[in-house]
Image 1 (cartoon, rainbow, N blue to C red):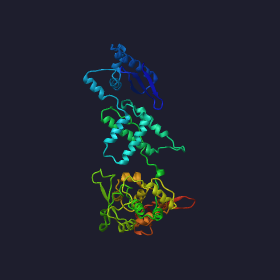
Image 2: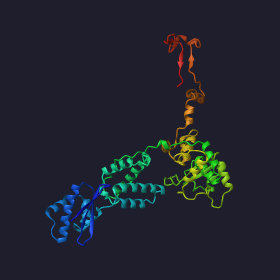
Image 3: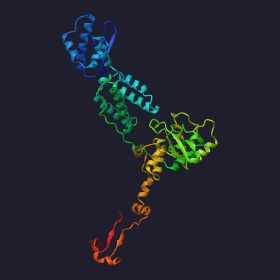
Image 4: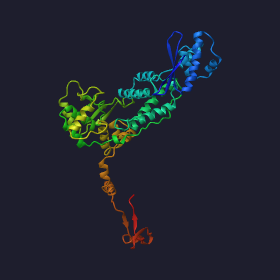
Length: 438
């Protein structure tokens, strides 16, 4: 007799039967209802009995074998319940079950071009997917409905305080990761469709985690630490706009072009793009004192930042302590917001393409992830923006008025286009011509 097991957590069912050698073998059905599983179990019992007794397969089971999908047929072949010609066996073997966990593991291992942090994100997506769908799930049985339910599952996850576990942007990254995995499944001809193709993941930026960090506050942080290397790390992040820590650890003294007032920044994040392995950053006046101080104490390693030598170093814990020591409240995205704040400052002074060249990103990325609206923008906006803009442009802020008295020679040819108040709030035609400033 065959038995049906049901995983209530993910809704998947498995049929187990005893083979002729006494071992118990399993056939995974994926998600299906109990009635369907019972019908399949009956046919499996017929196949197992025919094999054990060396008898022919019942007619109804033979007909059933003709209409089942290739995935189930392949699994029956794998456990020895059906036999075919060599060519058919080869074809069915290629279509046999491939588990979700095994495929993703092989895919991630094959992506030798991926950065460590990217791999880390993929592994998180893998863990979430396999926990929800089942690590041993057959790739061929995962449906578009499963993909939609996976997204809903992530949306419902809560922290201990009742807030959402995943922000829309983080959730979107996991959906994109799942999409990537199943695109590889399609590329390997394991299945012809991507169940995540129509599942949309939000790419919105979480505005609550975006914060402008002013120079006054960052100097408080610098003053709060006696460690000169940490002063330099903070300065490079906020005043130089370097990515932390990946660009810090690659910076050498040979990259400081003192005579040209430039810094050569090597970027592992963009090095796989042609012509973007490195960029030039100005030797900003705010940054110069910290580099000069570090140069006086440089060791034989040739590196500017000697405090950290691993691009995966965890600087967050120490930086949090420095911020609190400075009497400030820690902000979200500790180092990302330093870099974004610098780009926002520079954007006020220099053209977009110049700032993006210095920062090593594109205008599109800068607009979405870096540029911020600060309190200073609001303060400037309420200081009579029309007059301020006019003053900056070197033009008068009041309309130019031409009257008949001022130009008597043209009086006969003028048209009355202006208006004057005749009392009672009624505007009547006037002979003045008002020329608005466009």
